[in-house]
Image 1: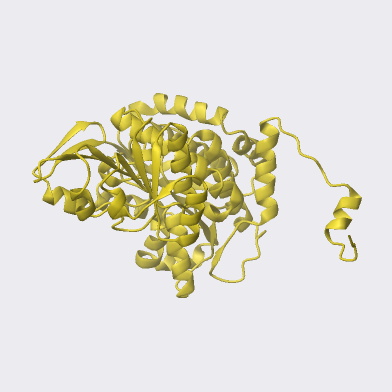
Image 2: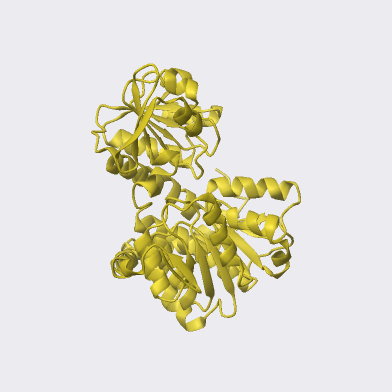
Length: 422
């Protein structure tokens, strides 16, 4: 482990490899790079101190270095013990970024790293899962009065923060970046769909065509996984608790079943719900010999991993991020990435192209908070204004060489006319 006053990473000698990965991501993220070019001149974050708790990937590094280019001081930690890419962490540390992150952190070091980012008294926070925000509220509440606001990247974190908001517990305003269309319509659907299958394939190298894949949850993430799996030739079963989501899955061509039914026939299971105990030990006992268990939700609570490991007669890692678990009944199941996010623990996370929009939303949210461009009237959860979100989408389209039609003056007037008849 390499450590200095402003960093702790696995191995600084990995920095050159990490820099190559970051260079590749930059070439795939034209919107964020356009904003970096603009903000390196205007410095909208000058004087701001940003504490970030987010997966340490090549795309995150592009965001971090863009924040610095915009004038901010930055301190960073990973938001999941298995999602840090050690080459990226090394490259950031070598570039002078305050960072405390390495792959395979235990719980104690995970929160120690978050605390290190808070030592320099941030004025803005950036989160994925809300652990940083909760750490401020529960362990460093004296810092809250100096924080202008924060941002939250993922569905699970937004749910937790909205619950805090409802109980009037939030001590500073937070922008739910997850709830902007350029995030959840693309990152959650296309990013999660592709990267989840990528993680499963890297950990197993199985053939997806012809397999029965059970997707728990048909929100944006589940829809992405189900459709990508269908495109690879899999037979997809969806489990749901919400009647609207279940009806949508049915009309989009998927079989909808209860988990207790699907457990008996599935070959591969993917949880995407953010809820605990979605796949229980009782479900696992009824599964086929050789069934594969994975999760792509933020926390490792969707599969009853502890109960499974305690019940098992033997556990061995048969491939990286793939454990063969023998049950007393004699059959085997395979657990991927210990039930943590398979797309980040076993693969590299979402493609750079889709994170380009999500992280542009993060950047614009922090700039908006710093420059008071958002109407923040209290300590609540807010969304990014539509006009900013649409600007990000249009920048992306321009980078892809796509042009839009424009309304004429007559068409614009027609939008608000109420005296037009048939």
